[in-house]
Amino acid sequence: MLIIGLVMIFSYSCKKSSDSSTPASSGTVTDMDGNVYHTVTIGTQVWMIENLKATKYNDGTSIPLVTDGTVWSTLTTPAYCWYNNDEGTFKSTYGALYNWYAVNIGKLCPRGWHVPSDAEWATLVTYLGDSTTAGGKLKEAGTSHWVSPNTGATNSSVFTALPGGSHYTNGLFYLNGKYGWYWSTTESSSTEAWHVYMQYNTSLIYKTAASKSLGFSVRLLKD
Image (cartoon, rainbow, N blue to C red; front, side, top):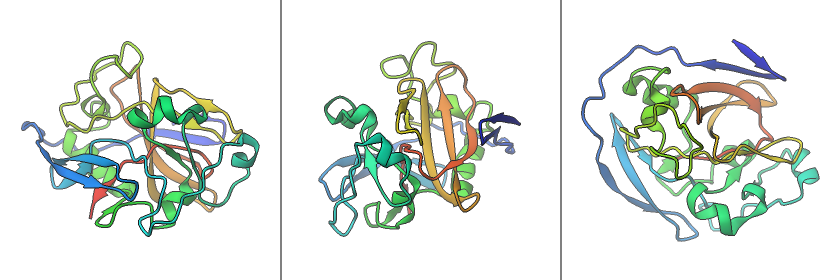
């Protein structure tokens, strides 16, 4: 276990299972903004292939857009932003960055979809083998978006994980191109929640408990 600040980082330990067949695209889904997402079946789960970029809840109301870093750092209410506050550059490819409070409100996803729990992320990792190789099978291959060397990236799962970076609790943006962080709905404490992340220089996938105020990418799972 490695401690970085107050964040515990450790990899999944999963029983290896087969992923010999290549998953196939299984349709599309549209959010309240009209954004269309492709989906893929991986084992018993159906995942979105793209990161969420919704600016409205599924009831049509707007998710608060917060661009002031000082305000962001003190939030305990739902918010989203674009990396570097640059929608034009980052929205289409990387989607939005949401704090956990936006995840937890229960209206972030198109109806029939949800943000995965920690256990549901673990199911995905287990299906792909284990934590030492699953990151590579999830990451988009090549270096169009991931920084070189993008170690182990094959995207054999067709999940197409992207390095969306993060909006940290100090209000600054970090590591687009190098790290892709994805929220789960599962709390680890009153102030922290679990998420997974992948990075450019390893095929590992990690599970981390971190502040609910962080801005991370969101990937959705079908109910």
